[in-house]
Image (cartoon, rainbow, N blue to C red):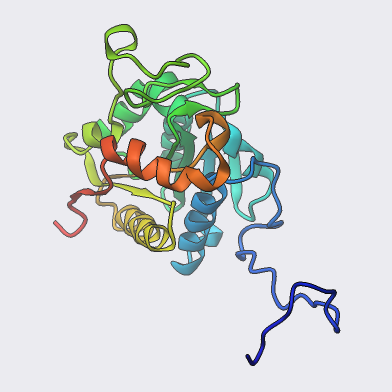
Amino acid sequence: MTGFVPTDRPPSAPARLVDDFTPALIDVGAHHLCPGCGEPVAMRSALEAVDELGLTRRAIAVFGIGCYTAFSNNLDVEVLQALHGRAPSVATGVKRARPDSIVFTVQGDGDMVSEGLQEVLHTAARGESVTCIMLNNGVFGETGGHMSAATVVGQRTKTSLEGRDPDLHGRPILLASLLAHVDGAAYVARGLVNSAGNVARTKKMLLRAFEAQERRAGFSFVEILTMCPTGWFVETEEAPGYLEDNLAAVHTPGVLKDEVDR
């Protein structure tokens, strides 16, 4: 077979790097997150969207607290660090001070739903022209993998080893579904990054969300379901299927609201 490289012995010619495929706005492609984590894929999609829309020089990111915070020093855009849960409020201040900028937040479900639910709800209600991105894996990953307000019923975490019990722990908050009913929100979508097709669909959502901000249509929001095999107690290769069968079965993917052209 032409081009076939046998693997039962060393190659006859040394391998050479053709391209590391690191996006233009990510300084270093390597990261220290757990194997199988979906957050690097989600971050790549967001930064590719910023680059493709030609928004780099006006982009300002506001990071919350979580595993993804490790990327804050690795992006070739301006980045501000917010207190736990407070990124939407910081983004509001940035956008009002610099209205021509493109401001987006990066938060996890622990940071946005458990710690700062009121911040994102009020930001949406005011119709602030910012874009909020939530990386939802259903756990507080950085602090050990305990249950968050978005953890689905039956999901195992460090603080729900037998699975989330609705009678004991309550039911998950479906943030994108809530925001879709807020008048100030112009665009609300929920994607996932467990397959190539879903990554492509999620990127389209991010492009549309930034377009909403460019048109000053109102608040825009993209929730991205990401894998966390470490926090889920599953093998790395099982994580994409686990996401599909558990989180995505409750936090249903799709465009929930699109009033950008209204």
